[in-house]
Length: 221
Length: 347
Image (cartoon, chains in turn blue, red):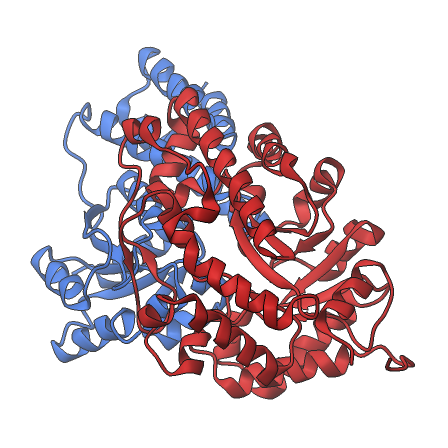
């Protein structure tokens, strides 16, 4: 039965059909499947399936990424409230767009995805100064700083990731915190993340979930 | 002397000139050319026209732009704040639509040509037309109704409304944006623009799944372009279009298709064939770091894929501000050299 549900849910999410996806989840809950199983055996595997589809075919649209993350976040919020015991946090991330950048969609997709992976997300919003990224990461004891940029000059500029890297170095935080970047400029120049001093990058918001989860494992302390 | 317009017309008609047409989208670089900050540069249509003419003369490419920055369209619809940068395109700093009531309240200007926010682009167009009209194609940038809401409410809010919101509100906004589009393209046409870059990220399956492309994007594009398709170029804002080309050609039958740098040029050319001009577009973000040799080799590869059979144009995407001038020249010189038609007799 679970397998049938997973297939139906995956199809609904891939088809960008939120209503059907939510109906499948609620029907599953009513049929006795636990909230924990809904998150860990349906929602998270669906995100994994989408990551696989992205890496294999590159034919998953931004709308599908957006919807998958929205649905995952919505279902996870609803289900975790019903968990028998509070889920253990899988890590902490501060996220925002780089200084001078006002494009928030990518960040929103990443945050939704991380939520389903039980990673705590502290959203710093748009146009975030480098100092604030670092200060907030320290305040929340985050393992990862995630910086989204949609424009070439905000990705490469001196006040973006480059400055965050330099602040981490200056304050001796490089072992404790990693930097991940994402956004259009990185898709067109796949080595750019190294130029700006990031530890990793992600091709899209959904894949970012896995990249960030891997980075967190590398710095768990 | 052979002009950019001669080259473009020859390519559109399947003939040959001395070389393929080469379009180079230098926009913000105009400020550097005139030695002034971007905000000051964009405050006066004379600055933009002067820089456009100077840069075309200096580098020798074939087109001119009347575009200031994309947020100008939001200003025509009530945006009151543009945030300028020192080294890149400005951001829209005030969202015209904050909630659904703003959509009901949104008013499309009766006459774009007399709108205060259109006066500087109009001044620029008049100068370009006077100085280079008929010799070098003048380009205008017009955002499709399906993508325009992203400039008015932010891409995240628009995506939310588009996918999850009430269809009636979404359709009301699309209808208003389409009305605006028709008026805007008409205003540019009346002011003397020759080429209309129809920018529609939502016209790519990189943005929307095929089902929504067929159900929503394609019909919406038909509505927009009911106003006429002369000189209209299909462009998905850098997103790929090969997967939808066949359908776009069948439904809209436009004259030119400006591929993504991520599209396979040979495949795009095969699909478009004789039915339109294929525009192969270089991944110009890489021009910042590539060596001149790497640039030459990439241009050569692109032209070998796109030139056989004619009806081909070489173009750039966003041309980031940080590209060194030497690399701009390396790209253009390679395009002029490898884009030459052997045996052509000048005149």
